[in-house]
Image (cartoon, one colour):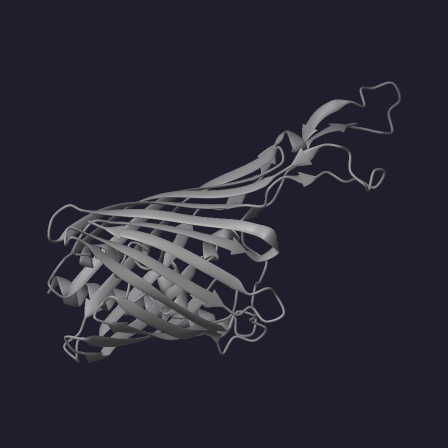
Length: 342
């Protein structure tokens, strides 16, 4: 009964979001949100599948894709992901999932993005003032997931978000919610997640301090009164994902999983991710997919990848995964992940 109620709530959310999307058709809202680094996808395995992972979500990157997937992990797991992102930007993601019991799991995660030090240039000194500034984004999350039944799981991720540029900073709190439901149709799994539901972000700091003359028409008054610029507030990039995954082939030697995700972000148009993963003895993996299907002006398209999972005397397993993403006119991106299950 509880499972049926949860599914009804899930369908209501999806239908409501779809109706809202119909009223803003062809309006992308690109560039209207803060903390867009939260939209950079995590985990080389998931990226190799074209980002179609919300209904798979069975490794430590589930904290990003669908926190409900943590409850499906059979062992504790640690994941480290490094990406040399576009324009010489460094992106890092780290997560750890600890099994509390057979039905629940606890997780922590860190996401970081930095651009290194850059020279300060002004109109009067276009070659640089000799000073440096930096831009850094960071998110730290705490997660919990539980199997409510043998087929239905739910998970939550609460996170603190901070952005810094020179002497200015902003912060926010957000929540991710995810569900997984395993159907009786050949083990097909349906997944849903809502990411980055939180308060708006507003930049503040000493760079907003200005000297102001309250009334320039009056002579002799103080024209150096301290004042602060009132900066606008910007919403977080809220994203709804709904996906399905199924093992088309599953034998003692090999497995072929296919998946598809529908995405509705608050700062872009709707799109789909599709992908597959072929496993040979759960040791060698080959993956491929297509990102941003049906999205106009989307540069990220084809993704391919692979991995090796190596067992260490039966008590632990090392995971090495790689993914290549085609970004069209932009530089292509290579992503690497290292994982440990124990």
